[in-house]
Image 1 (cartoon, rainbow, N blue to C red):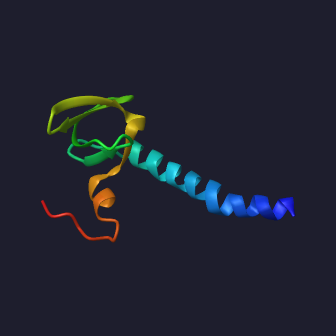
Image 2 (cartoon, rainbow, N blue to C red):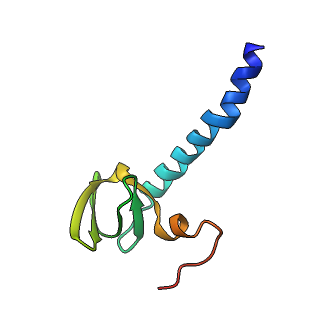
Length: 88
């Protein structure tokens, strides 16, 4: 009984979180200048500088320095989850 409950929790809660974390880490490693991104706190911006541990984003308020781990995902995938292309 307890084993079945654990399996249900694993497939409904733990596994999706692990998959999302893996995707975020892969995206953070492939980050390059000019990418439009969203941070984990919801800040949208364009990458202007990259160092091994930090990223400088240009936002509407100016340039802000973030830890690389704070970058969550690419802006168009955050905005258009149905697969619609972003038009600049």
